[in-house]
Length: 354
Length: 263
Image (cartoon, rainbow over all chains, first blue to last red; front, side):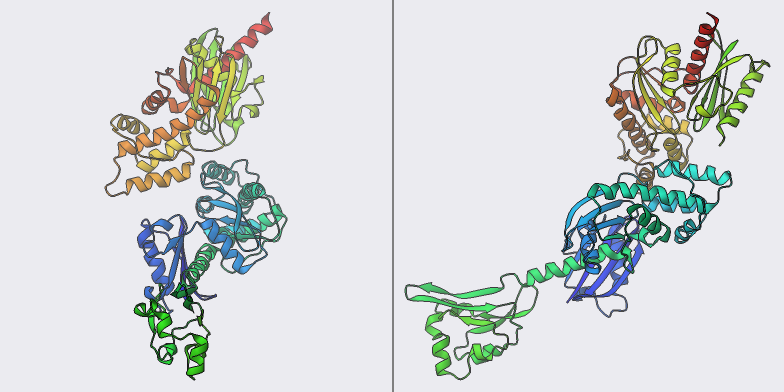
């Protein structure tokens, strides 16, 4: 079963394609000004090379800031739930997650099933977000990917007494003018962000194990500072940036399973003064092989598509009201006929009430 | 002995020299990274402007962000105290003064003698400060005067968040690139409103009492002052040189100290 999760964030859009329980492909692209266009681009990219098309995807869940604007999504779920679900797939032992995104930062607590139990977020201020780091990288003229590594080279951390991105920028500039090295300035800024994140984490209470998700989790310097502050070794997955989209794909799988198993047992028939006459078909086990159609001497079965387009055995509508007259019931039938619906069904999906 | 007040702000350094009740001279210069250097440079400029030479014959009170790092001042005073004293000199009827600086906003309530009753300030983040306004002017590529003029034409205002200067910037960009683009006057009205709403939260915290006056460099922006008046609900008083109010307050305190010493 193919499902997709798509995470339209403020700075980057992520998509994950899953087949049952394995990741088929995942991509990260920049979020453009139009969310709808971005979502189609992300979808196109994630399908590239898999030989699949949009029609092969059975369920899509969208998440992130732009989640309501994804036209092909079956459902949208908040990114907080998705991050918890996504990290739970990698590390079921994780109870505390710090999601450091492009324009916000969230501390999330979750339980053993990856269900969110508490969260705190900062989306009101650019301090401590990816945007902050981008601005600093620009001011110091260091590529964004290198600032983390460079901050680790610092010998004396420059103290920053501000959390505002605008003030930090001017403070960094004045330090630079005084001749403070870029690595010391970066170490100070990373420290400031880590302190701020720690305050968020404290408000949801920190429990073992701890993990960091979002784009900033790729910044080694940030991870090292957080490790010192939180005093826990963070569990990191190979690509922490796609966790939200992964969680969305996992939700898609769950939701799809739930729709498929809806009305798991369908009863056809009636009850009157003489007794209950129901033929029950377990749609969960029925694989639509159509063997029962030919096995029944009275031809009461037919194949019909269910909600998700799978063929399933169904009792013909016109026979349902007079079922007891056509079908002698399982015991009698099996005595008369060698081949019967119960015997022929490999999955044991059919049962009789009489 | 003359009284001299120095206010070292994050963007500019202000010096006021008083002779009894008259302002002999006032100077506004850009601050440098070192508070002490800023203070010395501004003081020298003020002395030469006033054609005074003997720099030892002064009682100096320093204030502002860098007020503590002026080694040659006799006394350091809080911004709020100086603001109250300074605004009282211009308008004795003022009970609420709003200082809109480059990197902070301060609101004080003062009594009939210009002494502080209550105060609230905001200096943790750039939203609602002069830096924010400057950043917006740069973004819209127009001088602050032009912004102020245009804001009076606005019929409605764009929705711009007042919580973060960085996020507000992207909101403005998206307004500019919208199809059709939001008119510039409406964007400016939105920017002004976001600054004013930030100041209003401070005002609400301590309560406003008539008369209200504004000080600080941002007070030179007529459009913004007008937007503030609309929110407060009555006219606010603006001194001729709103930037020097705090430095003047420091100088007034210096003069008092001279008088006390003479007694």
